[in-house]
Image (cartoon, rainbow, N blue to C red; front, side):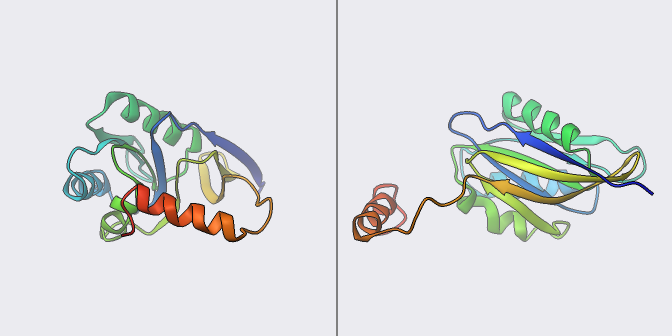
Length: 163
């Protein structure tokens, strides 16, 4: 048996975030769709899910064609069974993650970000691939100081997450 690794770069359009996770059943697409629309009024999204058996299709839904096409493209590049890709606009991952995590089919979330993202995929045989992990953003440049802490707190208040 052979083992090969591949790094998939995940494009993130301006004003969008991406969530990548793993689930286990064909109804994942419908249930994540419902979780998204019930979490944030006006959320725009595209969703793709890789079936791991049967027809092995990339199932997809969404209410934004650009984001749907992008989710399909990334899901095909990752090419690992039971992986889902969700692109969102008009919401942050913090607004939808708990709802997605509570979808009965969802096994794990690998990333939820607007940062540069790469997915590390292992191929153990032709047509047998799995996500090993993700690289989210960049390495730290240092430790925050007092000024940085104040900026962080001001930013959270500016965007409405703190009083």
